[in-house]
Image 1 (tube, rainbow, N blue to C red):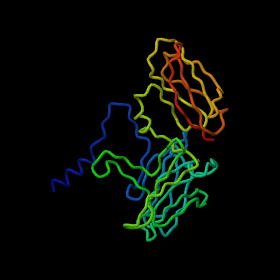
Image 2 (cartoon, helix red, strand yellow):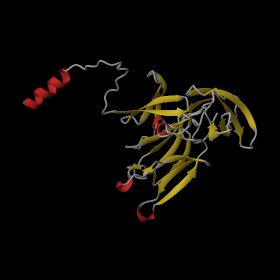
Image 3 (cartoon, rainbow, N blue to C red):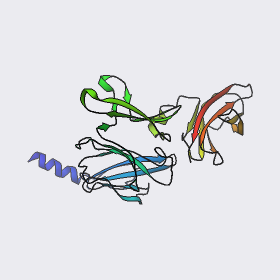
Length: 270
């Protein structure tokens, strides 16, 4: 009886807040839906809403209006997981949304990469994407997709039992960095984000220098200097428009008056 009274009091107790915290939206019922944010491009964040009872999912804008709805998955999949949603990660065609889903509890344990228009880009039975934090009690982190200097790679466990192998696939695009991944680089002198980008870059400069100005140069893969910008050293974050850049890899070089420099690489995807 005491436990029952406690639950009633818990329900009736108002939410108290003195900060600027505002309820935006309620997802209901939680037992039916999964809900989480995903970056489908450097400048686009959407919400994924999965309805497990109808084997469909929706994409919502940040104001919770519908972006895409009733994206159908095979009815035979009684349990599935949507792993990645993107514009250009798998086929570099930004006119369609593409996504990974897998059904590890299905009889064939099929792994799919599919467009929202229904086109299957990749399908493999007896396969699943590896994922773990602190694997085997250590500090290892494993994710299915990761960026490298040679593009994004997909890892898949293929097969069953002792005959299972790890397969590595190269992908067309690059994995969009999320806030967590960017935050791990805050100790660097220069942070560049989003990377890859579709037309705008932010340079966060934590470089201690006595010069009032810094020179930012952009260089293509042939070594040709293609653009210059002068940055005020007192300003920490600089927004740079690169809409005139073509898809591909580029380098930047940030130099002070004493010819001390910092350099790095970024990717343009359109």
